[in-house]
Length: 277
Image 1 (cartoon, helix red, strand yellow):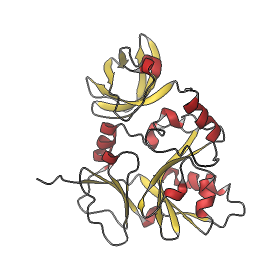
Image 2: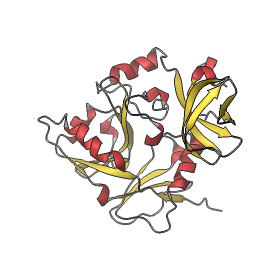
Image 3: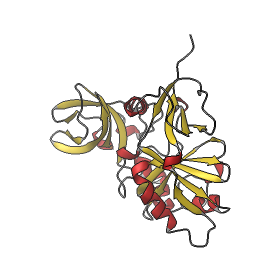
Image 4: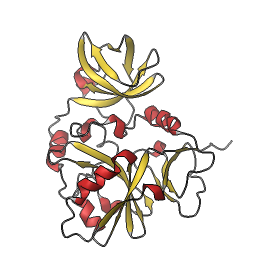
């Protein structure tokens, strides 16, 4: 029996278009991944950081003709354009909001479905099980809604913008290292120094990890262990969520508003031996 593919329409995701002959070089010096690897059918997952190496925005970079398309949270598109435009200087590039030109979808669980003319598709570069990203001219008929995709990514432990704290989160806290969101061999980019130090010196003290609960979880909240706060729930759906937790608390009983939580560390995640629950 063939495996059925699930497609979900993600109206909360938008698109930034970058055009011009300097588009690749311009973006290459700003973001955490290698922009030159974005080509038709191949997306790159990346992030924009502060000069101090703190998270600002995450996005998939897709190549389409003479454009780079940054699939990012729709609510963050204007701010992303504003921040990137500050570094344009003499670069021959234009940046514009193209969210109305594309309907963002995710597909998983089977082969990439047939898409309409004008659609742009690429495999989700984070994990093979993550599926594909689709930028279609309009919402696809029969597509599931956002909670279906949220359940999918929570099952895999994949982070999203809602799980990350702008100007606070470090990429290594959120799995960007294991999920192909950082290119360690590219040249300099904004925030590179701290990102490299957190990897090579083992400076990460928190991680965004999936958790399972004995009861339905609230949308967010403080997580405690032995009476002290050790983390926060960032996203949830039913009894599963993603929580930002102190590594030294992973082996201790955790609770949120009296609900017992159990970390469910995915196979792709690498933790220090002392932090393994």
